[in-house]
Length: 112
Image (cartoon, rainbow, N blue to C red; front, side, top):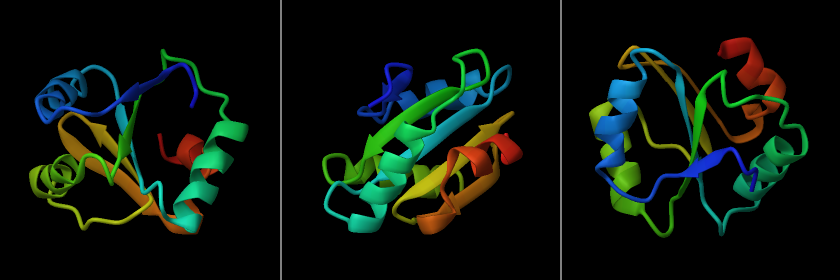
């Protein structure tokens, strides 16, 4: 895992993410540690990571350990659950989401 990635492991963090998105984009990566496609997306992100902490905050969510948080993300921001999934939150709303083979650092850069 990249050292700039934050771990999303407490449902309270969702309110903090919402507030922080008013001045800095927040990005969530929902990852299923038992899924081959999710593993591929995770490895591809790690290998090609070229972002600084100044650009956005990046949160890693392990879906198997924290399924309730994943469900809360889908409910709070009214999006369909996918795995793996990238979600960009800006000024409190989801401005971009992608999943599966769409996930890449290049795609994230274009949509940030």
